Each structure stands twice: as structure tokens, then as C-alpha cells.
Amino acid sequence: MGAKPYLYCVVIRAPKVMESIIKVTHLSKVFKEITAVNDLSFTVKKGDVYGFLGQNGAGKSTTIRMLLTLIEPTAGDIEIFGYNLKQHRKEILSNTGAVIERPDLYKYLTAYETLHLFAQMSGVKIPRQQLMEQLEMVGLANRAHSKVRTFSQGMKQRLGLAVA
Image 1: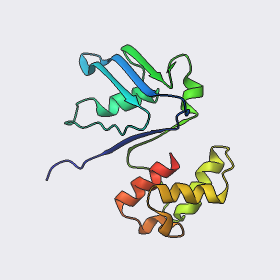
Image 2: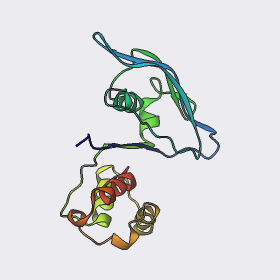
Image 3: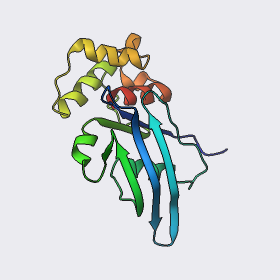
Image 4: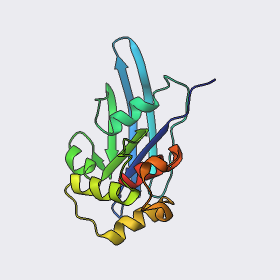
């Protein structure tokens, strides 16, 4: 049996005037003698859905980790919202959420309670209606009061997107 597919997703709340949300130019990452990402360039425009597909070891996770500043690139530039990621890290990441592979969720909470808890942990007060809109956006409004432990893996991934 082959390897299971992974979900790689970055959610970015873009200012309304932005056209180019992410711009990656000549990005590379080398770990000792292994080149994980080699001269990668791409642009994601507002409204685009962009995915990373490739074999194991192709650099998908490494690229996402560089976009989230979890690891530093060996070379290249990353701009998000038109700002250099190295220089404006805090401002950019305050409007960015990510789910890499599988979200870590509390299985004994409901979907709504999960969103509410993560908002509180982030220091953000979000009205009930807005939390319900987030669940609607990911197709889970009808399961808002169901325990996460009853969700399929796909539903958990969608809840992770709502949290992000």
C-alpha cells in the first residue's frame, strides 16, 4: 500500500487591495549535502487556490515551512502581501494560518467549541455568528455541535482550515 496523501494548506487573509499575495523568487534550501528545494519561483494571486503536489522528498513541506518561517531559506526571497517576510515576519504571520498534514484537535470538543477555544488562545474575541460563518465556509455548519471525535479525517482537515 502506498503512502497516504498529506494536506498542505496555508490560509492567508489578504488586504482587499492586494493582487499578488505570495511571491517566491529563486527559493532554495540545502540541508548539509541535500538540496531540498532548488531555485523555486512562483506567485499566488488573490483568489487563487495553490497546491503542492509531488513525490516524497520533493520539497513540499520544506517550502511550506519556509513560508511560515519555521526554517530559514538558504537562498531566495519570499514576499507576502508585498512585504519581505524576513523584515515583516510578525505582521505577516499575524494574518496567516496553516495546516500541515493533519491538524491537532481536541476530540472531546465540538467543532464550535474548537473554533472558540483556538480564538481565545490567540487572544482574539470572535462573535458567535462569525465562528458559525467559518464553519459554514468549510462545510461543517451542520456539525457545529458534534464532537470532533465523530469526524472523518477530511472533516478534521476542514475544521483545521477553519481554525487556521
